[in-house]
Amino acid sequence: MHTNDEDQLNKQKEVHQEVDDATQIKYFGGHEYDGIKELDNPLPPWLKYLFYVTIVISFSYLILLFVFEDEDIVQKKEYRKEMMAAKAKTDVAVSEEATKTATAAPLTEEQILAAGKVIFDKTCLVCHGKFGEGLVGPNFTDEYWIHGGKPEDLLKVINEGVIEKGMISYKSQLNKTQINNVIAYILSLQGTNPPNPKAPQGEKIVKN
Image 1 (tube, one colour):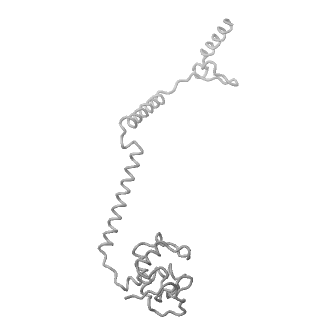
Image 2: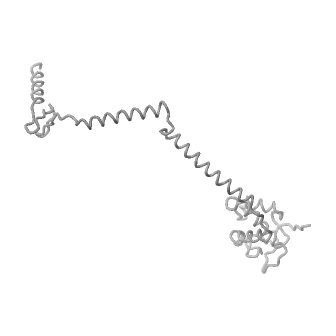
Image 3: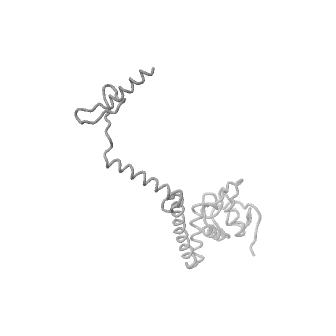
């Protein structure tokens, strides 16, 4: 066994010492497949130095990332910075919009009713009729109310809905201004005489 091992080592040394006739480069011992021998060809200097540079860069990056925690490199901090900047822009836009709203001239009664009619025609007409005369929903033109006829009563119904009667909540669909405008329009229908009004429902509420 000892002799065989020595013979094998000698063969590997002989193979390793073999030189390619064309390039005069030694063969890499033990690397031969299908008659193809691998040359012991060293890397060119520029590739070797480039490899060293990548090692230095990687090591420096790890030091900055985990030791110094540089804000320009740590991605989480960059993300937080971007989010804070975006939030600042949003806050400025909201503030400007609020300022415009606060400084805007108040609407006249006619403008409020006109804006309320737009909302009514879009969301209420299908159940309460074009003139508020009542269809599936109750009549808005008489003195009878099922859930109360005060503005706060209408506000509650619009915000919360009356599911058992098929009235959904519009709190997520209308803003406060739109709700107030449509309430004003609904109350303005009191005492009008629309064609084919629905029969009274609820309790009679007479305004003082």
